[in-house]
Image (cartoon, rainbow, N blue to C red; front, side, top):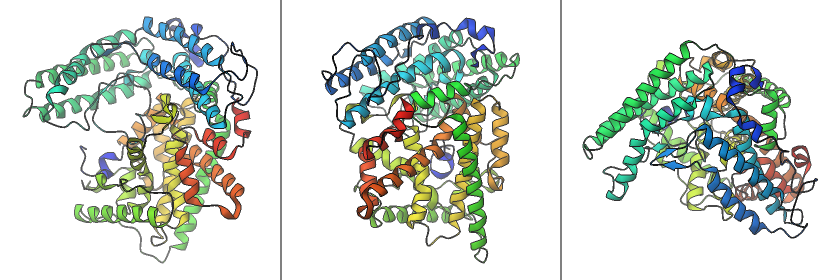
Length: 572
């Protein structure tokens, strides 16, 4: 999630198309021509399509075999730790994608069980994701932040948000000293960093000031991360430190290059445009709502949250206000109490079946930020950490992914191109209000106000995402909008939260809307299923069935759990 800028605050204890806009851009891009074939957008429950296998003769096993080949094909070629994102390599991938989509079109799933039709649509969405990446996003040629070389914080969602190169060096779980068997691979990745950035300078031929700004912020952070890594390695592995220093020098040189290149760039908004946004929502993320529909809903959700906040404040007018923790000792006590209360509520409240291994203990601890350094999520957590423990469900779900991987290989790991966003972010966001209504905050009446502040902030961010990608906003305008519209002035204009969030939404269109739109989709599913089950409805059974479907788009989960195909007809 990118309620992850709060990681340094609440994970206390951690370090802290208009492709026509520029003729130059059009000349540089030849890949879309290779993809100018009819898009495979039919759904598995029907629709005309080309096929070479007679109806009824395709098997789910063929799909799994194709899926495994597809996942290997999707990876770039890697030589000595350097993934190949050159123009020639990307043209080759585009040609290969055409063949994979034709093979998928030859598989007929109409006679399959519903769950296998869902699998078919997952594979289709991933292939459409590569198509969208090549035709529209093209991060290798226009997005400096794509060339991420080190990550020192673990994502709480299934995979890192937004496009980035294959195989970036992750050091958040680095255990020192390194085992002998791991040293060679570690050094290969370190020594690859200068060559990765050398390739990036040649590949980045489409200029966009906003994306360059994001790249500069990222490379500044990466230089700091490499400095911290060098310090950690100095004792147990001093012989590796020179590799780290060379990597850091190459990052600094790349940063200087970005800053010099940015000086002469015009500030043209670089969102994908409404038509391409809608295409991505429909055919990649399988969200049955257009840009316009999402905007209307989000504006209404912002109004609803602010109205509910006013009503809660009226109801609580005679209660003392929520005050932030006064020091690190009190903050840790609040965190410990909130985590224990949250886990007990999940188990005792029969919300879902909670395995014994599920714990939030890794989040205990406490860096205490002074008042002037508290960004939005610290403002929430320092008053009451309990509402945001609902969003920390991300970490419980990651534990489930490791301990109880989905038996279906198509659903086992993270879907490509962040196709999981509406499900993962929608659930974590939805739980905040769902569990409040289920009783979590009955003994914390003023904390209900925090929930509506969270909803408002997420709605504001999502509107920023939409207006970035419609090109009404540039990056700085989106940041100002979010800061101005977030309640209480709690979103810092120069803080990591707003800049990282808006950066992700510019680089991964629709990620910002997934929190609230995904939440709404889950709410619709809950309503549908409760009507179907009638007096026999059980929240625990509903949630267990929901989890059993895997971390896949909510529209597919709804189809599988209810048999209702109205959304699928929109998406075909």
